[in-house]
Length: 224
Length: 328
Image (cartoon, rainbow over all chains, first blue to last red; front, side):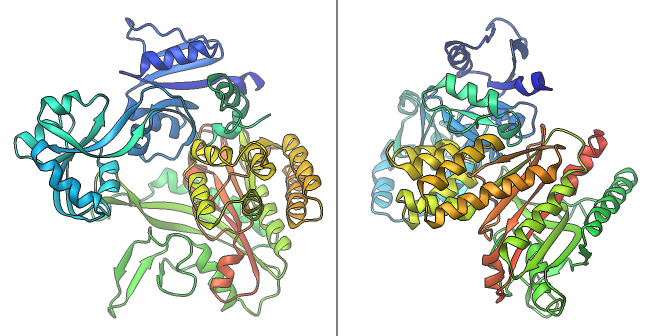
């Protein structure tokens, strides 16, 4: 029973953040035997079991109890709408959410938004409908949100959308496609999240994980 | 039915049979404690007294035949509270009642649309002239209901009044307190902790919230609450800390060692009408509470009552899953 309570399952995000997450766990003293050449999606390291999941699925795995904790970008967490504890900003995987539009249209859009006004109508292409809807409320009177699975930068160029909401790291992809930032919506970075049940029932290993992963530990996991 | 509103479904024979057994078992627990059963209507008036409290945005509304707007109940506490001040006004106090049935809420889908959500609840409420009496009776009933789960359960107790008092003492104004509680409600411990740290390491009240905010076990809680009572001796905060400590101790005794009891000052319930004691119970690996409730004197004032009201709702959908796994 005691042993069960000290075992935790951690969901890691596949893709660009996986190596950074594995490195952060290693630096915190956890055995995270992640092998980038392996296709294994489940592996063990001491008292920790790791799952590798698509980033947008990490909050789902954690919320539904398949994992006790997870590492996911704030963007994916906000988009998921899942009810989980958000414990720490892990500092890596930084990027920005922006509203971007064709360069020629940016001054007119900025003028309205900077003056605190509302845009009458805007067709926005995005992979993040929830974040876009929240942003558009109060900014656009009649927003039309076009949900795409990828390459949203293409949408304004072919007349499918007037603007896009997307993640930007350097802004180079936007520039190459003739787009520029209208305004920043929010910033994102990797977050440590916990299942609502595990947050209390497995408080000790979660508090240990937080303490070891950052100076801001001991604030969310509890003391047993 | 499910084609009309996605999210609404029927219960098929095996599940319906389990539900009947579960309701009978929980009804026996409630009746053993002196609670009386009531049956509440599925349709409510969304504009009556107290309707601004709680799940306003999530109500599924429709036009009634006379042109007025009606709604499916999204929560049964308001119905029970209204019943207590009208039809049950002449009944002796404390008045303990229980009920079961479906509630219906709008749930946001990942896309632009809204789904309907159908939950099965068993709820209990206590109406009393004494706030501590209503709170303790509701908590006692919740603890006995928790005992129907065999293992791996944790009951977490919080106190909204203590949290508010500490936050005000720490120096939060109304707007900051609202933002802080919104962070806690959305389980954003990172944002809530950052707000407290920004108040400075010397801020005793902010430091106390940071320590009491997680789901700490009872031993740690008792020590922290006793220190708080000592540090703020002679104030209302000290009294609230002692009351909370006493309640945690009582919960441990009542649990009889059948499940763990923790104190989580950061516990905020999704319904805005809770004003004092709050509690939730979690089963291992299940991301939603098995049971949740607390004291809602603010709601009672909103419906024109001077009484104290406390209660809880148990999620029978979660309980059915636990039954299927052999945990109930």
